Image 1: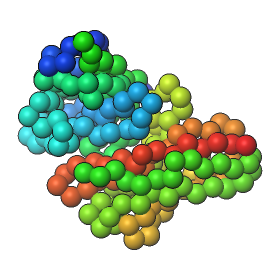
Image 2 (image 1 turned 60 degrees about the vertical axis):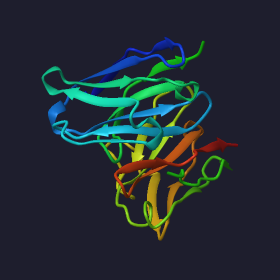
Image 3 (image 1 turned 90 degrees about the vertical axis):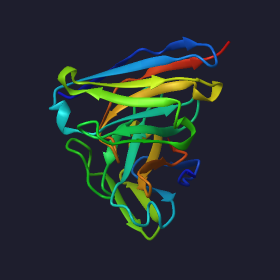
Image 4 (image 1 turned 45 degrees about the vertical axis):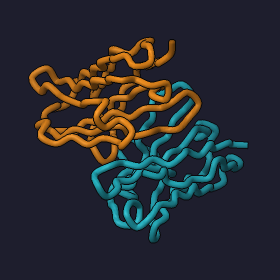
Length: 116
Length: 110
């Protein structure tokens, strides 16, 4: 059974940093692109970033370029999301998802709250 | 990076069929095979119900079907059931290697 488990969310002040982790089990992790998708409170889904199987290519939405970094460690079956210079509009549930241009499995999400 | 356009809400009675539209441009929906649909119940993670325009993942009911014409994709749910009441999101790969989501459609089963 495919499972994705996120961790690392929490409350952070504007301008602060947070690192999210996502562990994947039940599939050959190194064979799949991975993505992060977020959802602001009461709002819709928003794609944020995607990373290729071997980590050689990464893609981001415009508003997070230069602030957020997606990475992975295939030996640990994990994908990470380093978020710097956080802003209030970054608040939301962050989902880890399998695949790049569409997502076939999703984690349960981890809540990131940016507030003073 | 404009979002895809979906109706905010649709409704139907049990047993009826409904269709949700998702309008993009020739740079995304119009040219991409990577058009997908997700179902999300309140407080839950999204669930993939259609991928690559019209394919259904294993385990998804055949009451769900997808199609595309020009820059507009559509999700049709036939034989509406109470459990279908949820939010539905379309998404599409777009040029410059990004993914766009629609704003979401709230389905109410009357």
